[in-house]
Image (tube, rainbow, N blue to C red; front, side, top):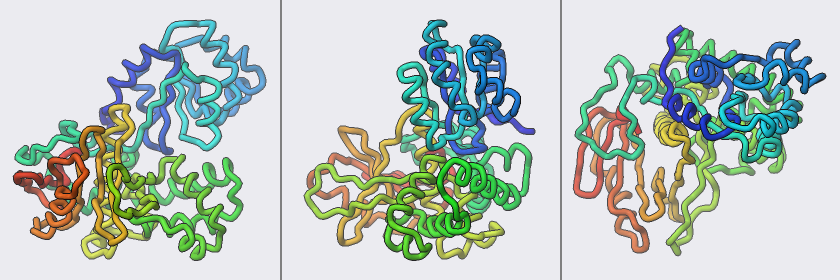
Length: 399
Protein backbone atom coordinates (compact mmCIF):
# COMPACT_ATOMS: atom_id res chain seq x y z
CA UNK A 1 0.00 0.00 0.00
CA UNK A 2 1.52 3.32 -1.13
CA UNK A 3 0.86 6.28 1.17
CA UNK A 4 0.83 9.69 -0.50
CA UNK A 5 1.13 12.85 1.56
CA UNK A 6 -2.03 14.96 1.51
CA UNK A 7 -1.92 18.74 1.28
CA UNK A 8 -4.37 19.03 4.17
CA UNK A 9 -2.12 17.31 6.76
CA UNK A 10 -0.57 20.48 8.21
CA UNK A 11 -3.79 22.44 7.98
CA UNK A 12 -5.86 19.84 9.78
CA UNK A 13 -3.27 19.52 12.56
CA UNK A 14 -3.25 23.29 13.01
CA UNK A 15 -7.04 23.48 12.91
CA UNK A 16 -7.36 20.84 15.63
CA UNK A 17 -5.50 23.20 17.93
CA UNK A 18 -8.35 25.70 17.69
CA UNK A 19 -11.48 23.53 17.83
CA UNK A 20 -12.60 20.78 20.24
CA UNK A 21 -13.52 18.59 17.25
CA UNK A 22 -12.64 18.26 13.58
CA UNK A 23 -14.92 16.66 11.03
CA UNK A 24 -13.23 15.27 7.91
CA UNK A 25 -15.86 14.86 5.22
CA UNK A 26 -15.86 14.06 1.53
CA UNK A 27 -16.90 11.38 -0.93
CA UNK A 28 -16.58 7.72 -0.09
CA UNK A 29 -13.02 6.39 -0.48
CA UNK A 30 -11.40 9.82 -0.75
CA UNK A 31 -8.88 8.93 1.99
CA UNK A 32 -10.56 10.36 5.11
CA UNK A 33 -9.63 7.52 7.48
CA UNK A 34 -6.04 7.38 6.25
CA UNK A 35 -5.66 11.14 6.67
CA UNK A 36 -7.08 11.03 10.22
CA UNK A 37 -4.85 8.15 11.27
CA UNK A 38 -1.78 9.78 9.73
CA UNK A 39 -2.22 13.20 11.34
CA UNK A 40 -3.56 11.92 14.69
CA UNK A 41 -1.48 8.77 15.01
CA UNK A 42 -1.49 8.92 18.83
CA UNK A 43 -5.28 8.98 19.11
CA UNK A 44 -7.51 6.03 19.97
CA UNK A 45 -9.51 4.76 17.03
CA UNK A 46 -13.14 3.60 16.85
CA UNK A 47 -14.93 2.63 13.67
CA UNK A 48 -18.70 2.60 13.64
CA UNK A 49 -18.50 0.06 10.85
CA UNK A 50 -17.96 -2.30 13.80
CA UNK A 51 -21.46 -3.46 14.76
CA UNK A 52 -20.54 -3.95 18.42
CA UNK A 53 -19.11 -0.44 18.75
CA UNK A 54 -22.08 1.03 16.94
CA UNK A 55 -24.47 -0.81 19.25
CA UNK A 56 -22.53 0.24 22.35
CA UNK A 57 -22.51 3.91 21.34
CA UNK A 58 -26.14 3.86 20.28
CA UNK A 59 -27.53 2.09 23.36
CA UNK A 60 -25.38 3.68 26.06
CA UNK A 61 -23.66 6.78 24.66
CA UNK A 62 -22.55 8.14 28.04
CA UNK A 63 -20.78 4.89 28.96
CA UNK A 64 -19.26 4.76 25.46
CA UNK A 65 -17.78 8.24 25.82
CA UNK A 66 -16.35 7.35 29.22
CA UNK A 67 -14.40 4.57 27.52
CA UNK A 68 -12.95 7.09 25.06
CA UNK A 69 -12.96 10.40 26.96
CA UNK A 70 -10.82 12.38 24.52
CA UNK A 71 -8.16 12.15 21.80
CA UNK A 72 -10.14 9.68 19.73
CA UNK A 73 -10.96 9.24 16.05
CA UNK A 74 -14.62 8.32 15.52
CA UNK A 75 -14.72 6.84 12.03
CA UNK A 76 -17.85 6.52 9.86
CA UNK A 77 -19.78 8.67 12.34
CA UNK A 78 -22.75 8.85 9.94
CA UNK A 79 -23.60 5.31 11.06
CA UNK A 80 -24.14 6.48 14.65
CA UNK A 81 -25.45 10.06 14.40
CA UNK A 82 -27.11 9.85 17.82
CA UNK A 83 -23.72 10.08 19.52
CA UNK A 84 -23.37 13.70 18.36
CA UNK A 85 -25.87 15.13 20.85
CA UNK A 86 -24.04 13.49 23.75
CA UNK A 87 -20.69 14.53 22.31
CA UNK A 88 -21.74 18.17 22.57
CA UNK A 89 -22.11 18.15 26.37
CA UNK A 90 -19.01 15.94 26.69
CA UNK A 91 -16.93 18.45 24.73
CA UNK A 92 -18.25 21.35 26.78
CA UNK A 93 -17.29 19.58 30.00
CA UNK A 94 -13.78 18.80 28.75
CA UNK A 95 -12.89 22.26 27.49
CA UNK A 96 -9.75 22.75 25.40
CA UNK A 97 -9.26 21.68 21.79
CA UNK A 98 -8.32 18.79 19.54
CA UNK A 99 -10.12 16.08 21.50
CA UNK A 100 -12.20 14.44 18.77
CA UNK A 101 -11.70 13.70 15.07
CA UNK A 102 -14.86 12.67 13.22
CA UNK A 103 -14.86 11.17 9.75
CA UNK A 104 -17.73 10.38 7.48
CA UNK A 105 -19.07 10.91 4.02
CA UNK A 106 -20.94 14.14 3.49
CA UNK A 107 -24.16 12.28 4.06
CA UNK A 108 -27.47 13.94 3.63
CA UNK A 109 -28.73 14.08 7.21
CA UNK A 110 -25.28 14.02 8.84
CA UNK A 111 -24.29 17.53 7.75
CA UNK A 112 -27.37 19.02 9.38
CA UNK A 113 -26.91 16.89 12.52
CA UNK A 114 -23.32 18.00 13.03
CA UNK A 115 -24.17 21.65 12.36
CA UNK A 116 -26.96 21.54 14.94
CA UNK A 117 -25.25 19.46 17.63
CA UNK A 118 -21.70 20.78 17.39
CA UNK A 119 -22.15 24.34 16.11
CA UNK A 120 -19.09 26.39 17.03
CA UNK A 121 -17.31 23.31 18.33
CA UNK A 122 -16.32 21.55 15.10
CA UNK A 123 -14.14 22.54 12.13
CA UNK A 124 -15.25 21.05 8.83
CA UNK A 125 -12.54 19.78 6.47
CA UNK A 126 -13.48 18.77 2.90
CA UNK A 127 -11.30 16.04 1.43
CA UNK A 128 -11.60 15.12 -2.24
CA UNK A 129 -9.61 12.44 -4.10
CA UNK A 130 -5.99 13.18 -5.00
CA UNK A 131 -5.05 16.33 -6.85
CA UNK A 132 -2.16 16.40 -9.31
CA UNK A 133 -0.07 18.31 -6.79
CA UNK A 134 -0.54 15.48 -4.26
CA UNK A 135 -0.16 12.60 -6.66
CA UNK A 136 3.04 13.83 -8.24
CA UNK A 137 4.41 16.07 -5.48
CA UNK A 138 4.01 19.21 -7.56
CA UNK A 139 4.45 22.64 -6.01
CA UNK A 140 0.96 23.90 -5.08
CA UNK A 141 0.10 27.07 -6.98
CA UNK A 142 -3.68 27.64 -7.18
CA UNK A 143 -3.52 30.90 -9.13
CA UNK A 144 0.17 31.09 -10.05
CA UNK A 145 0.60 32.28 -13.63
CA UNK A 146 4.25 31.45 -14.32
CA UNK A 147 3.92 29.70 -17.65
CA UNK A 148 7.71 29.46 -18.00
CA UNK A 149 8.02 27.04 -15.05
CA UNK A 150 9.50 23.70 -15.98
CA UNK A 151 7.20 20.76 -16.67
CA UNK A 152 7.62 18.43 -13.70
CA UNK A 153 4.98 15.79 -14.37
CA UNK A 154 6.60 12.59 -15.73
CA UNK A 155 5.78 11.87 -19.37
CA UNK A 156 4.57 8.35 -18.57
CA UNK A 157 1.42 9.92 -17.13
CA UNK A 158 -0.44 10.83 -20.28
CA UNK A 159 -3.49 13.05 -20.25
CA UNK A 160 -5.70 10.15 -21.36
CA UNK A 161 -4.36 7.97 -18.54
CA UNK A 162 -5.09 10.61 -15.90
CA UNK A 163 -8.58 11.29 -17.25
CA UNK A 164 -9.41 7.59 -17.52
CA UNK A 165 -8.12 6.49 -14.11
CA UNK A 166 -9.33 9.47 -12.14
CA UNK A 167 -7.84 10.29 -8.75
CA UNK A 168 -9.34 7.98 -6.12
CA UNK A 169 -6.53 6.92 -3.74
CA UNK A 170 -7.20 3.16 -3.88
CA UNK A 171 -6.49 3.01 -7.62
CA UNK A 172 -2.98 4.36 -7.01
CA UNK A 173 -2.26 3.01 -3.54
CA UNK A 174 -3.18 -0.57 -4.41
CA UNK A 175 -2.58 -0.40 -8.17
CA UNK A 176 -6.07 -1.75 -8.87
CA UNK A 177 -7.61 -1.92 -12.35
CA UNK A 178 -9.61 1.34 -12.50
CA UNK A 179 -12.66 -0.08 -14.30
CA UNK A 180 -12.94 -2.96 -11.84
CA UNK A 181 -12.55 -0.70 -8.81
CA UNK A 182 -14.88 2.02 -10.09
CA UNK A 183 -17.55 -0.57 -10.90
CA UNK A 184 -17.46 -1.80 -7.31
CA UNK A 185 -17.31 1.77 -5.99
CA UNK A 186 -20.37 2.84 -7.95
CA UNK A 187 -22.37 -0.25 -6.97
CA UNK A 188 -21.53 0.39 -3.31
CA UNK A 189 -22.50 4.03 -3.67
CA UNK A 190 -25.91 3.06 -5.06
CA UNK A 191 -26.59 0.37 -2.47
CA UNK A 192 -25.25 2.09 0.64
CA UNK A 193 -25.49 5.83 0.08
CA UNK A 194 -28.43 6.16 -2.26
CA UNK A 195 -30.72 3.31 -1.21
CA UNK A 196 -30.02 3.22 2.53
CA UNK A 197 -29.92 6.92 3.28
CA UNK A 198 -32.42 8.40 0.82
CA UNK A 199 -35.90 7.58 -0.40
CA UNK A 200 -34.72 6.41 -3.81
CA UNK A 201 -36.50 3.12 -4.48
CA UNK A 202 -35.76 2.52 -8.15
CA UNK A 203 -31.98 2.23 -8.42
CA UNK A 204 -32.20 1.48 -12.14
CA UNK A 205 -33.89 4.84 -12.69
CA UNK A 206 -31.29 6.59 -10.52
CA UNK A 207 -28.52 4.88 -12.49
CA UNK A 208 -30.07 6.17 -15.73
CA UNK A 209 -30.18 9.64 -14.18
CA UNK A 210 -26.51 9.47 -13.09
CA UNK A 211 -25.39 8.43 -16.57
CA UNK A 212 -27.46 11.19 -18.15
CA UNK A 213 -25.67 13.64 -15.85
CA UNK A 214 -22.32 12.18 -16.91
CA UNK A 215 -23.18 12.84 -20.56
CA UNK A 216 -23.84 16.48 -19.59
CA UNK A 217 -20.73 17.20 -17.56
CA UNK A 218 -19.42 20.68 -18.31
CA UNK A 219 -22.83 21.73 -19.63
CA UNK A 220 -25.71 23.86 -18.42
CA UNK A 221 -28.29 21.81 -16.55
CA UNK A 222 -31.55 21.32 -18.39
CA UNK A 223 -33.79 19.91 -15.67
CA UNK A 224 -36.76 19.17 -17.92
CA UNK A 225 -34.63 17.34 -20.50
CA UNK A 226 -33.09 15.06 -17.87
CA UNK A 227 -36.49 14.49 -16.27
CA UNK A 228 -38.05 13.50 -19.59
CA UNK A 229 -35.19 11.18 -20.50
CA UNK A 230 -35.27 9.20 -17.26
CA UNK A 231 -39.00 9.37 -16.57
CA UNK A 232 -38.86 11.34 -13.32
CA UNK A 233 -40.41 14.61 -12.18
CA UNK A 234 -38.51 17.91 -12.12
CA UNK A 235 -38.68 17.91 -8.31
CA UNK A 236 -37.17 14.43 -8.21
CA UNK A 237 -34.35 15.43 -10.56
CA UNK A 238 -33.48 18.42 -8.39
CA UNK A 239 -33.52 16.22 -5.29
CA UNK A 240 -31.25 13.66 -6.95
CA UNK A 241 -28.82 16.35 -8.05
CA UNK A 242 -28.60 17.41 -4.41
CA UNK A 243 -27.78 13.81 -3.49
CA UNK A 244 -24.94 13.70 -6.02
CA UNK A 245 -23.57 17.03 -4.82
CA UNK A 246 -23.82 16.33 -1.08
CA UNK A 247 -22.08 12.98 -1.52
CA UNK A 248 -19.16 14.59 -3.36
CA UNK A 249 -19.86 13.13 -6.80
CA UNK A 250 -20.62 16.38 -8.63
CA UNK A 251 -20.25 20.13 -8.18
CA UNK A 252 -22.75 22.66 -9.47
CA UNK A 253 -20.96 25.83 -10.59
CA UNK A 254 -23.08 28.98 -10.60
CA UNK A 255 -23.07 31.71 -13.28
CA UNK A 256 -21.42 35.04 -12.51
CA UNK A 257 -23.69 38.10 -12.61
CA UNK A 258 -21.93 41.03 -10.92
CA UNK A 259 -21.30 44.26 -12.84
CA UNK A 260 -22.95 43.12 -16.09
CA UNK A 261 -26.15 44.43 -17.62
CA UNK A 262 -26.27 42.00 -20.52
CA UNK A 263 -28.65 39.07 -20.44
CA UNK A 264 -26.81 36.15 -18.89
CA UNK A 265 -27.85 32.54 -18.36
CA UNK A 266 -29.20 31.54 -14.96
CA UNK A 267 -28.71 27.76 -14.96
CA UNK A 268 -25.70 26.26 -13.18
CA UNK A 269 -23.18 24.03 -14.93
CA UNK A 270 -22.67 20.48 -13.77
CA UNK A 271 -19.21 18.98 -13.23
CA UNK A 272 -18.18 15.59 -11.91
CA UNK A 273 -15.42 15.77 -9.32
CA UNK A 274 -13.57 12.70 -10.60
CA UNK A 275 -13.04 11.94 -14.27
CA UNK A 276 -12.41 8.24 -13.60
CA UNK A 277 -15.95 7.81 -12.28
CA UNK A 278 -17.18 10.05 -15.09
CA UNK A 279 -15.52 7.81 -17.71
CA UNK A 280 -16.97 4.72 -16.03
CA UNK A 281 -20.50 6.18 -16.20
CA UNK A 282 -19.90 7.06 -19.87
CA UNK A 283 -18.94 3.39 -20.42
CA UNK A 284 -15.40 4.25 -21.51
CA UNK A 285 -13.48 1.04 -20.84
CA UNK A 286 -9.98 1.87 -22.16
CA UNK A 287 -7.93 5.05 -22.02
CA UNK A 288 -7.27 4.80 -25.78
CA UNK A 289 -10.98 5.49 -26.39
CA UNK A 290 -10.54 9.00 -25.02
CA UNK A 291 -8.33 10.21 -27.87
CA UNK A 292 -11.30 10.42 -30.28
CA UNK A 293 -14.20 10.46 -27.85
CA UNK A 294 -16.82 13.11 -28.72
CA UNK A 295 -16.91 14.27 -25.08
CA UNK A 296 -13.14 14.51 -24.60
CA UNK A 297 -13.26 18.31 -24.49
CA UNK A 298 -15.83 18.36 -21.71
CA UNK A 299 -14.10 15.54 -19.82
CA UNK A 300 -10.89 17.59 -19.94
CA UNK A 301 -12.76 20.71 -18.80
CA UNK A 302 -14.24 18.68 -15.94
CA UNK A 303 -10.75 17.59 -14.90
CA UNK A 304 -9.39 21.15 -14.85
CA UNK A 305 -12.39 22.50 -12.93
CA UNK A 306 -12.10 19.69 -10.37
CA UNK A 307 -8.41 20.54 -9.93
CA UNK A 308 -9.33 24.17 -9.27
CA UNK A 309 -11.84 23.10 -6.64
CA UNK A 310 -9.32 20.77 -4.97
CA UNK A 311 -6.67 23.48 -4.81
CA UNK A 312 -9.01 25.57 -2.65
CA UNK A 313 -10.35 22.73 -0.53
CA UNK A 314 -6.75 21.72 0.15
CA UNK A 315 -6.22 25.13 1.73
CA UNK A 316 -9.52 24.87 3.64
CA UNK A 317 -11.10 27.57 1.48
CA UNK A 318 -14.28 27.69 -0.53
CA UNK A 319 -13.42 28.11 -4.23
CA UNK A 320 -14.59 31.48 -5.62
CA UNK A 321 -15.48 29.67 -8.83
CA UNK A 322 -18.10 30.72 -11.37
CA UNK A 323 -18.59 30.72 -15.12
CA UNK A 324 -19.81 33.46 -17.46
CA UNK A 325 -22.17 32.99 -20.40
CA UNK A 326 -24.45 35.41 -22.20
CA UNK A 327 -27.66 34.76 -24.14
CA UNK A 328 -25.69 34.59 -27.42
CA UNK A 329 -23.68 31.62 -26.17
CA UNK A 330 -20.40 33.46 -25.58
CA UNK A 331 -18.80 31.82 -22.59
CA UNK A 332 -15.87 31.96 -20.19
CA UNK A 333 -15.37 28.41 -18.94
CA UNK A 334 -14.26 29.38 -15.42
CA UNK A 335 -14.17 32.69 -13.60
CA UNK A 336 -12.34 33.10 -10.29
CA UNK A 337 -13.71 36.05 -8.34
CA UNK A 338 -11.19 37.56 -5.92
CA UNK A 339 -13.40 40.46 -4.91
CA UNK A 340 -11.40 43.35 -6.32
CA UNK A 341 -10.73 41.58 -9.62
CA UNK A 342 -11.66 38.46 -11.59
CA UNK A 343 -9.50 35.91 -13.36
CA UNK A 344 -11.13 34.39 -16.49
CA UNK A 345 -9.96 30.92 -17.51
CA UNK A 346 -10.54 29.21 -20.85
CA UNK A 347 -10.04 25.41 -21.02
CA UNK A 348 -9.03 23.69 -24.26
CA UNK A 349 -8.31 19.96 -24.65
CA UNK A 350 -6.21 20.42 -27.80
CA UNK A 351 -2.49 19.70 -27.50
CA UNK A 352 -1.72 22.51 -29.97
CA UNK A 353 -2.08 26.19 -29.16
CA UNK A 354 -4.41 27.83 -31.65
CA UNK A 355 -5.00 31.54 -32.13
CA UNK A 356 -8.75 30.94 -31.86
CA UNK A 357 -8.20 30.08 -28.18
CA UNK A 358 -7.61 33.76 -27.46
CA UNK A 359 -10.66 35.28 -29.15
CA UNK A 360 -13.26 34.94 -26.38
CA UNK A 361 -10.85 35.98 -23.64
CA UNK A 362 -9.77 39.08 -25.51
CA UNK A 363 -13.37 40.01 -26.19
CA UNK A 364 -14.34 39.47 -22.54
CA UNK A 365 -11.35 41.40 -21.16
CA UNK A 366 -12.41 44.37 -23.27
CA UNK A 367 -15.96 44.43 -21.85
CA UNK A 368 -16.78 47.55 -19.84
CA UNK A 369 -17.48 46.99 -16.16
CA UNK A 370 -15.12 44.12 -15.37
CA UNK A 371 -12.05 44.38 -13.18
CA UNK A 372 -9.96 41.73 -14.91
CA UNK A 373 -6.50 42.67 -16.20
CA UNK A 374 -5.43 39.32 -17.61
CA UNK A 375 -6.70 35.85 -18.42
CA UNK A 376 -5.50 32.26 -18.52
CA UNK A 377 -5.81 29.44 -21.02
CA UNK A 378 -5.28 25.89 -19.75
CA UNK A 379 -4.77 23.43 -22.60
CA UNK A 380 -3.92 19.78 -23.25
CA UNK A 381 -0.32 20.34 -24.37
CA UNK A 382 3.02 20.65 -22.56
CA UNK A 383 4.44 24.09 -23.25
CA UNK A 384 3.28 27.38 -21.80
CA UNK A 385 3.34 30.92 -23.14
CA UNK A 386 3.22 34.31 -21.47
CA UNK A 387 1.59 36.96 -23.65
CA UNK A 388 0.80 40.54 -22.70
CA UNK A 389 -2.59 39.91 -21.12
CA UNK A 390 -3.15 36.15 -21.52
CA UNK A 391 -1.04 33.34 -20.07
CA UNK A 392 -1.16 29.83 -21.56
CA UNK A 393 -0.61 26.99 -19.09
CA UNK A 394 -0.18 23.25 -19.58
CA UNK A 395 -2.61 20.94 -17.80
CA UNK A 396 0.50 19.32 -16.28
CA UNK A 397 1.09 22.27 -13.98
CA UNK A 398 -0.65 22.36 -10.62
CA UNK A 399 -3.61 24.75 -10.55
